[in-house]
Image (cartoon, rainbow, N blue to C red; front, side, top):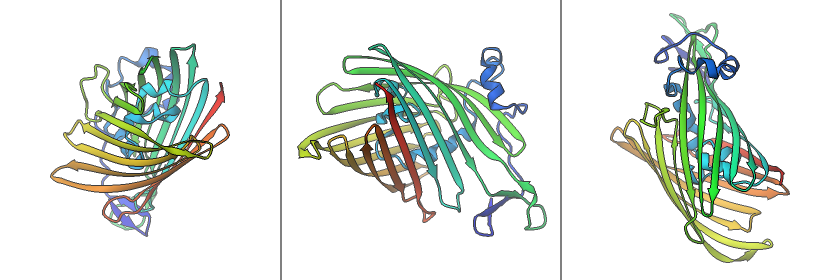
Length: 321
């Protein structure tokens, strides 16, 4: 893949998706799950790894993410917001990368101990063009994307919340399409005041045995009171998280934050991914504020090797109590 004309890039010989299957529309696949589950691969296609871009602009470890969007990272988050809640998140990378994503989720608490949710997302790469012996493009752009739709359920008893999510994946790389199913589980625990512990799998196979896209993470957050501000109690937060990936890579996550009641929070995070004998720390800064029933979050990740900044904008809203 070479850069052409600033943000334009080319593929001289497009690679092919692993285990390509016949072209199917995602909507048809979702409607046909009861009948088509047998032929679908019991793991996510490898192109689903594009979703790691969203993880590069988190300001708290993935297993601690709350709300409808948090279910994408930890299914136990289906229990984190009372009533009916909606979430939306957009991530955009610099032009040289030309990736963008959209995540959406809905959660609803049924009674006092059961939460259910649905989620969907799409991440795509733009400005890819096909060339042969000429640097000019031929036959238009090359479509590259990964998308999913999932259903989740969870329960909470006392300080323990657990959840599970089933996801249907669809990816496309040029003319190749592939599909797959994954099943993930998650846990969020508050054993003592101020301490939150989370653990989750992501994109694991249906039998949780692994798969090329699987990742397993755990994290802890400790909150210390620091007086009062903006009508609520101020607090300092410290977090640590670790993620183990199927290829043996390990990612470490450190972050600290200042929360002013439930109205404003400022976070600074550092992520380090170690793999293939290399590693580098990536800084992320973020601000989250509440306006009525809306919780808005904005974050910026600096990226690696001077590639440029990645931005995330998220919105969570409580619709019904």
